[in-house]
Amino acid sequence: MPDPDQLRVSDADRERLAEELHEHTVAGRLTAEEYEERLGAVYAARTRADLDRQRRDLPVSTVAARAALVQRKSKLRRRLAQEAGGSITASLVCIAIWLAAGANGAFWPIWVIIFTMLPVVRDGWRLLGPGSDLEVVEARLRARHERALARAHRRRRRYRGLLP
Image (cartoon, rainbow, N blue to C red; front, top):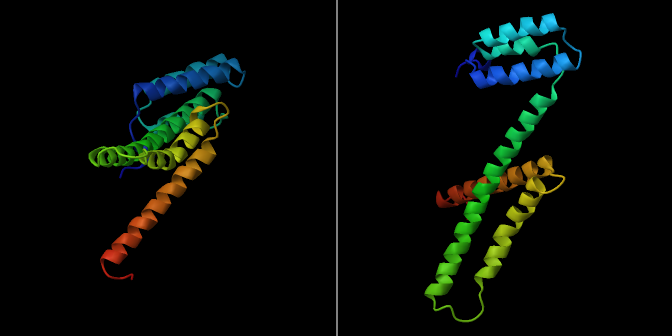
């Protein structure tokens, strides 16, 4: 895999850094001459290292922080949607079984729906609701993923006859 600093950058990467430099100029961290000089270097940049040299001595800007937050939330939303897909699939299978059995009696799939969707709804609220808490959502998703990996590992060992 190539060195990340040597990866080529896109026009969107250059534009984001140009916005950051403008923000730093407005805040008084760069003079107009420094801004123009760095802006020229940004538009001439070909690699990630070229862009990083232009922001090396500057603090993280609100533009960069906002972009990182949006990217992190997007990643967490995708992971949560994957979990919701699994929960919905299990719920639909249970509903199909209930219907195939004649749909007699109480609607027992509701318990599967509640118990499989409860963590997804709770984490969805923490992620998308007011006062979102990304660290908690990320930790819960990671813990559920690690538990699933451990279960899969135990199943493989049991299948191979290593466990009773």
